[in-house]
Each structure stands twice: as structure tokens, then as C-alpha cells.
Image (cartoon, rainbow, N blue to C red; front, side, top):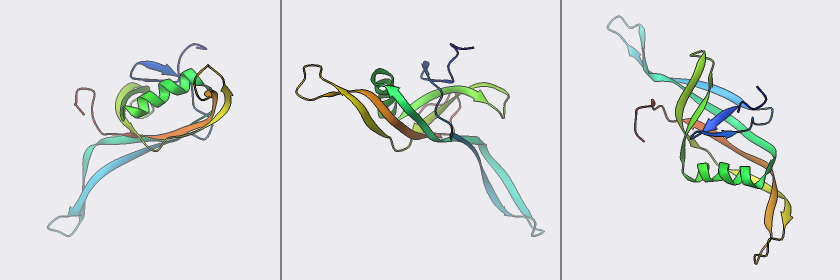
Length: 136
């Protein structure tokens, strides 16, 4: 279990985020009233997930760079344990705003210093509502 990743981004393992991660589910519905005046609700698609406060308090530069490159691609397939289905699923997500703080810097012979350690790398992940076979 020690080597099992918390989740995968496009098949790449990433560590577990810090405590405070919120996993939200949103069910889109279309509501209205029938001829008898009763409220009707039609489910649209499936429940969509959102991961709020995905935060890594301290992370090495190489892992942070991989994460940020996924964010830069705008969308990612996330593999994770889904409590609704009771198993592992793959879903397409997009990233919310990204922020981080350089903690330690190193001189690598470039014209500026390179971050060595990153602190508080964070963003949100929002389910796009697509199934595995759907295209973005």
C-alpha cells in the first residue's frame, strides 16, 4: 500500500494532497411542473465531482513541474476511488486557478535562480461531466 498512489493524472501517479481536501458531488437537474402542478425533476447526466482545496504543503520541484504541466494542458483524466460507484473510475477534469510559492531556490547556472522546493501548490479540479469514451 505504501507505493500505491492516491490518484493518477493522465496515468501519472501523484501524492495525496494535504488535509482539507473537499470532495463535492453535484447533480444537475432540470425541474419544472407537470399538468397537476407538481414539481418534476429530471436528472441530467450523472453526478459530477469537484475536488476543492487540492493542496500540497511542501513538494519537490520535479513533482510540482509535472503537476503544473498537467494544469497547463487544461484538462486531465483523473483516476481515483469513487465512493458513489464503490470502485476506481476515470473522469475528465479541468483545473481551477493555480497558485504556489517558491520555498527554496538553487543556482543552476541560469540567469535566474530555479525553485528547488515549492510550498502550497494548490488548485481545484472540476469534473467535466464526460464519460471515458467522450471527447473533449
